[in-house]
Length: 99
Image (tube, rainbow, N blue to C red; front, side):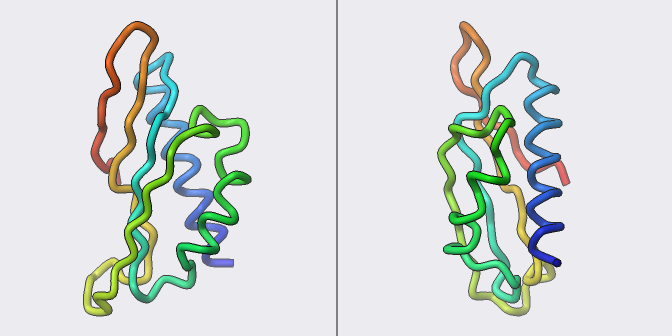
C-alpha cells in the first residue's frame, strides 16, 4: 500500500532526526500532503498514533498542510517539512526537511 510506505518513510526520518540531536524528544512535526496523494489528512491523523508509537515523536504535536496544487512535482507525496526537537536543558530547535 502506497500510504503505508509513505508513513514508514516519515517514521524512519523522525527516528533518524531524533538520534542526530541525541538525546532529543520531538515536540512538533509538520507534514505536507500533496493534492494527488492517496492519503487524506483524516487518514493521516487516524494512523498517526500507530506511526509514532514507540518513537521520540509519540507525544509530538502534528501540523498538517494539504495542498490543492495538482501540478506540484510532489503532488502524489507526503513531505516532512520540519520537526521541532527538544533536548534536555535546551530550548526547542527546528530542523528543516532532510529529504
